[in-house]
Amino acid sequence: MIKVSNEVTIYEVDGQATGGIPMPTMTVASHWNRDSLVVLHVNGKRVTVAARDLQAAVNNATNVNR
Image 1 (cartoon, helix red, strand yellow):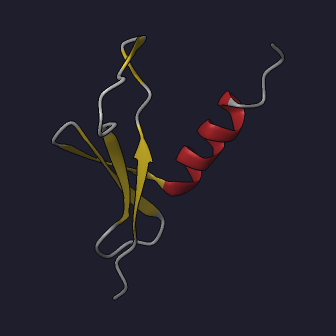
Image 2 (tube, rainbow, N blue to C red):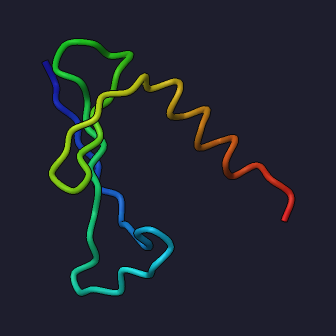
């Protein structure tokens, strides 16, 4: 099994800029036995979601007219 983990910088929490040094991060990691799931590590919590659903949600959230 190969374990993959990626850190993503957190820029705002509840609409407030984080601004700390170092900047807080969240981690997106591979699930231990299902490649269709990913595990999000945020503020000491682990949340497991469908990888395709997360990809679709990010694509939809960034595909808006401003």
